[in-house]
Length: 371
Image (cartoon, rainbow, N blue to C red):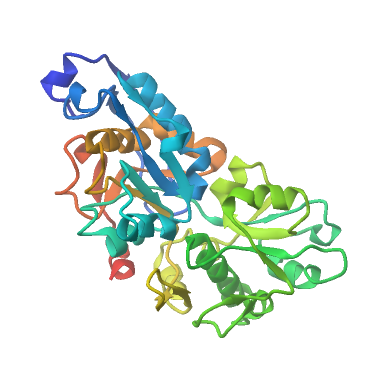
């Protein structure tokens, strides 16, 4: 248990929330029992009064961060968290906004835990807090008869036979250069070939042009590039037949989906899975226009309070709420996310005092992925 500074403890009510979380999907994510949470968890009550919480986060978090921000407003005197101060977009757009457009935000959150260390540290941030995992799944329009009987083993074959036939809409894809969902979708297709196809890359090669490992260009005859904000509507309305996305997005939008093999879905972190990940790669276009090679990794969402945050105390308070039992309950509803507690950090010495009891160092297996 940890204690707030006396200046805060004297001014705020205290309660105990006890919750058991058994993490699944990513190996050794962790569990906790007994977590003490207090209102206004900043260095002092005046640090957050009359402040506006600003959030810049991955698009998938659109359904999860607003209710938590509203909860923080209710629990902390004198702050606001209007929707106008919250922006949700591709994670690579998030980091580019901070590094190239001088965006200022109290919290930045991304869908690939490698982005904060590689793109923001040490100039724009000093640490990250890895707070949840969610695998890739196949979302599909269940009214399309060609998908009858689709499952974790045959989804690749079903897509190959369905998309491109008369009456079946195109397959939805993401922009891999702005959104990790884009390159994770590519990896799921490649890994499906390795796991179930004896090394056959036919799923990838039908929907993308370009040699695996190089720049992947969506096949214009069979795909439609989309933005996450419109994806659910496009699937429901039949504009696209299917797409690969995070389970959290599928759950939040009540979409029919197929669970992948853990390696294919990028949720496994065992030695076998890590060796499979090392076998595939793709290229994306960086914010400076250069080609960058990306390899698969377990999907882990991470957050930080940037160095130029307008209200760093308020940002830390939000991250603290995010990893608390209250935050975990929001994230795990419908098994959307698997919360991680204690959360993982790449720099325990740099996290603010309010977050210090919430974090432990990143697991050893992540070191090769961050190199």
